[in-house]
Amino acid sequence: MTEFIPDYGTKKDIENRKLGELRKTFTRNLVLLLTFMLNKNYYPMLGRDGEKHKLYSLHFDGLAVDVILTKNDTVLTKTSDHLEFGLYWMSLDPLNCWGGDFSNPDGNHYSMSYLGKK
Image (cartoon, rainbow, N blue to C red; front, side, top):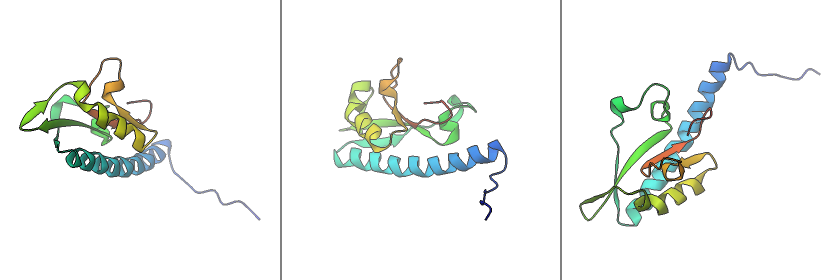
C-alpha cells in the first residue's frame, strides 16, 4: 500500500494556505477582543491602516490591526491603557502578539506572528 502524499504545490501556495487559516483565527480573536473591550465599557475603533503600512507588514497580510481605545468620549493613547486587553489578546492564541510587549512599545497594536513578523 502506498502512502498518499497530498500535492501542496509551491512553497508560496503553502504559505498562502497557512496565511488564510491564520487570518480566520485572527478575525475570530479580534471579535473576541473587541467584545471584551465593549463589555468593559470601552469603545474601540479600528485604526485606518491605509498607506502607513507597507507591503511586508502584518497589517498588509491581514494579521494586524491598530485599535483606538476610547472611554467616556476620551481617546486613550497610553500603552498602559491597553494592558488588560493586551494580556487578554495574548491569552487567546500562542501566536498572538501585543505591541505593548515590543522593545519600542506600541500599545494599540494587536497582531498574530507570521513568517517571523510580529
